[in-house]
Image (cartoon, rainbow, N blue to C red; front, top):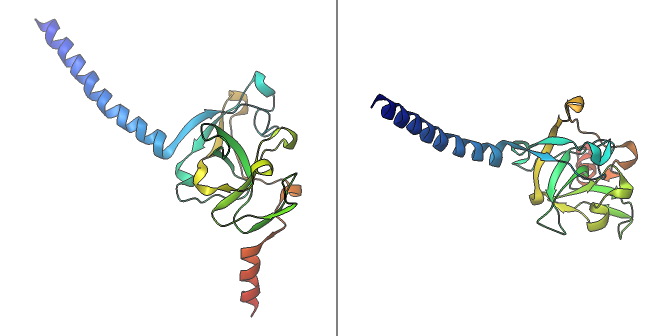
Length: 183
């Protein structure tokens, strides 16, 4: 008889814990952060420097992009503009208002429109990025890679950086502000 009471209490505790844990976990994954395995060579050497033999796993911070505050150099996860079923991870090269010198896009120079980003892989010869499909809407961004969490030998925070040869030529919005500030 005592055994039955113990079993019921155990089951009741398990069920109540389950009904608390599931919504909390879903909320964390939906609003705060989640992990993703990075596949492919497009972000080498920053991510996956050893190739497919040891893929990096990154923490994607959803909270930091909730208001579309993305800066140059951030590595972001984006829904592919060509295949919405696929997520891609690339570096932000240009933000709205920037003039970008492209690498094989249909126009040699592009002004990034409002509400868009210019994203590129670090390994240009192996990347399907804005040079193929143009500027990407901020609405497609769903996370910023903040840390490499696997393999343990590569544990580190990911700092935003833009290679010197890929920096924007000019930010039109800021240039216009500077012009009016001088008056």
